[in-house]
Figure 1 (cartoon, rainbow, N blue to C red):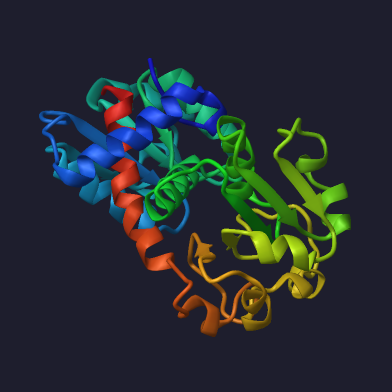
Figure 2: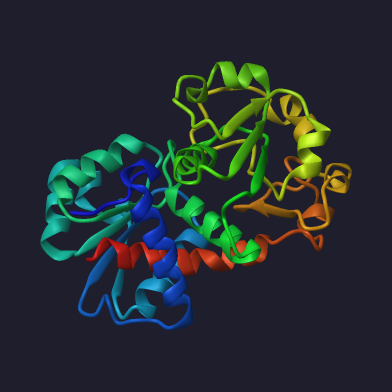
Length: 295
């Protein structure tokens, strides 16, 4: 049984198979989910992920079923385990967004059918699959590309770091605060040799990068109670930062963005920004994931 809780649930062949299948489905949809019912559970707010899965499932001739936790007996007397066992009686797969990654793991055991992590406090694999798809589409390759991440150490970055093991010829340079790094899981994980951490801006690296990425500074269920806007202010993506970059460099943000925090409006709306196309590709990538699962 296939499932996607983390990028590490994939191998390199799986990863590129998803990208290639997304490419194919971007050109022509297939009725691969005909007579299949896919449950969507979102414990946290969602715009792009929810809509892209709803639309993608329908485009593949499947039936998306919205499940609201507040309307279930789970809120009264039924246990989490029994609830997900019941889901398994009716549904063919689940798309689950939660504030606790352990719930995903428990759900997988009880549901015993494919589950997709639509974002958790630990990781956001769907976002990174879409982002790598977007980079490959934009640059017509994914090898020999340099990515710079500026800002917080969050769930999106965690999935990007995991994906770098599949992209040995692509480099990831992470600029963040040293204290945040020392208090994060990133200090303990085994990172690939193509990943580097920096605690001050390095103009030379910024000038040579192909892509600048960031995300909001306050992630879901943030355990580190710090004034991140103040701590990370020097890593804000603004016109000065983007002026260092080469003409071909692009700016990416998974959205939603907090303007004048991690990024300025001028950068978000600039000619180097591909955030709208990045968001559009969420639909394409979700369909690639759904096909790979072989539901």
